[in-house]
Length: 176
Image (cartoon, rainbow, N blue to C red; front, side, top):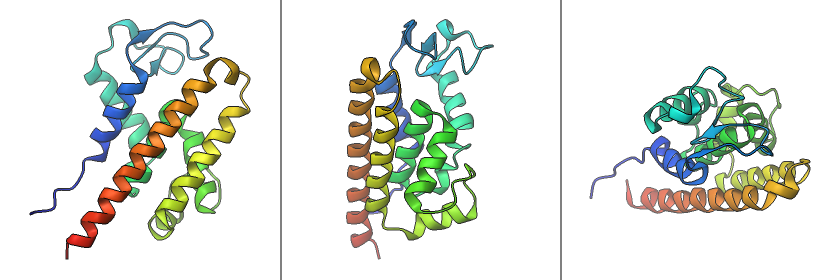
């Protein structure tokens, strides 16, 4: 059986589209009008109501996946960083990554961060990342309203990433 690499961007998009859903305009959401997780606050010139999944995918690839250098991270960790970037902002996602790796928290995913991501015990880093992400959520003023959903999403993201981690480990055992 040939090893077929996983397209983690596609896995991440499936995950994000599951959690972000369609069009909403909740006055309690600081992002305002939102579709597929793309908010009017972040993208004031985008016609949110008529945004297509293909357009959202392009925004996500350019402004989140590539901006956080997810394609250069171990795949399971990339899923976690990407989902955090979408939900909490790319700056926070990068700093959470750096804090979890024990490197300087400058918000720049450069050679030091990438090197540490490939050398550290991935399962430990993933757990630290999830804990740090949860701690950020519980300190937000909107946690009372959105917290249950945020934590459900976080647990699902962690589970998806851990499943990918285990699958990768099993494949590496079989591939010479």
